[in-house]
Image (tube, rainbow over all chains, first blue to last red; front, top):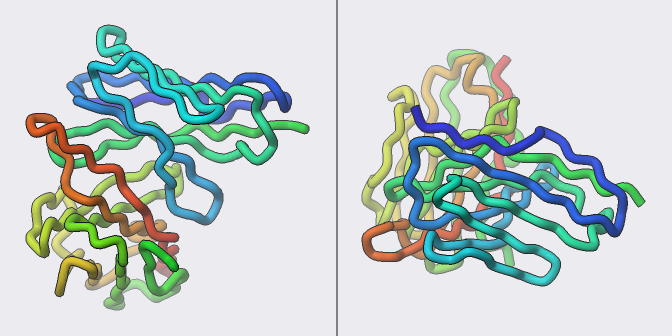
Length: 110
Length: 119
């Protein structure tokens, strides 16, 4: 069966450190993968998209990698700040729709 | 300007009632979606419309009926509400549906959500 697994449910880190989130998938062949941020009581907000032929994508302090052999994407937040505290969702292209992971909640301590 | 808006934000109702949630997007997108996010925060697609035509209908009870009067609106009507329908419902839109073969991607813009509580 198809599965999308995001590492731990929660990740607590100190301000200034790098947060690394993982997204592993099984029985999908995504042409691209997206990462979204969701704050409590709000809808997800798009952050980054990476295609299967791209190894790495960056946007400001965010970096995403995509390894189709390992069937894994890594999402990094460098120089983390308390304002980065949120839930981060990965989403895979799946036949005209997106399939989402359950998310990892990141808490950045000042 | 709100890109994707939903009403109401909160909906509390009794089992067996019928209710509707409305969604509007002002982004000029062709594709709109309904998602359900349960208590475990798992976001699951229910329906998708492209240019007012239904293109995705996941395994959803037929008590749920979407309706798209035009490209900018996608409403969700739920009949005979059950306890298990309690969740947050999100509307979203994208420029077009994603397609691996064509290289199109479906970056989605979400509404603020409607928290439905069935008592």
